[in-house]
Amino acid sequence: MVIKKNNQKRNGLTSLVCDHDQKGLVTDEERGEIICGPCGQVLTEGTVRSDSKPTHNLDGFLSNSQTGPKSSLTIYDKGLNTNIGARNIDFAGRRISSKTISKFKSMRVWDSRSKSKASGRNLISALVLLDGVKQKLGLSSAITEHIAFTYRKAASLGLIRGRGTAEIMAASVYVACRENGIPWSLDEVANTLNITKKRLSSCYRILIDHLDIKPELANPLDCLSKFCSVLEVKEKTKRYAFDILKQANSKRILSGSKPAVVCAGALYIACIANNENIPQTRIAEKTRVSSPSIRKALFVLNKALSVV
Image 1: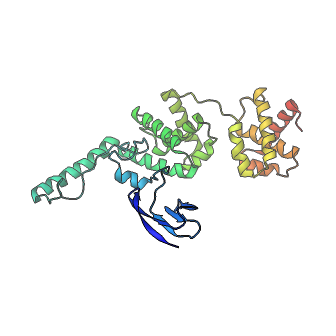
Image 2 (image 1 turned 90 degrees about the vertical axis):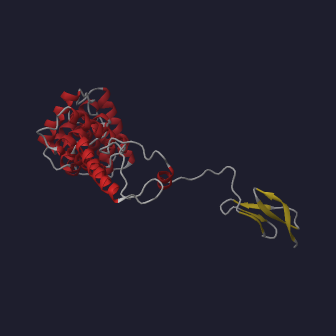
Image 3 (image 1 turned 45 degrees about the vertical axis):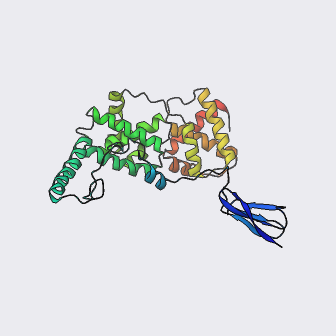
């Protein structure tokens, strides 16, 4: 085998040509190499695919971006703050004088105080609390933005005065969940923020009255996926319960009842119809409704739809 250097450069790289006269060349796209198939000699190294797209990560974006991350309502200053650097140097990298250093120290103090006063310590603690709620309930970024917007609006109207931060935040969480069709109940939200259900209900009514919020009626179908995952039922049972709830909604059966009760009753009927042995007490425990309520929903649904 004879290998000789090719005078032509490809993409700025000198390539080699063997005696096979470029027959059976193989391109390794991962390593960026062109290999002669018959003899296995690497002819060109460091090639770049023409159709390849550059990969970006968050650290590289923040280091190269001139605008920084996008603004967010979940940050107390909406991510639009400016910081006075801690290094005592000027724009050219030279150390500033001792007299200027003392001025900068005073400016940093007043800068931090003005931010906390403008944003409010109450808002800062509330948004820190919101971050914990997001992790516990598994809320998305869009939902947390909605919650922060509701809380800021309530704070601007003075609805927080005389009430706890956790109570208004819990009411904002429940409002956002109701408006976006997320099946979190009053009990679950109250337990997450360690407040009573009575206080949460009171703050929820205050937000509805003052913010002119008109949440839609809760749909039992929103609770179905959650209950099925908790009870670990089969897919066939889940689809049967879905059909029952669709018929109940179209005929307005149990209209005005608690959605969790209707969903639990339909799920229990689906378990009986598909021979899935899940006790009624276990369904009542996981769905947090009483057994008599499930039996009542079972009776009404079976009488109207004749499903069992």
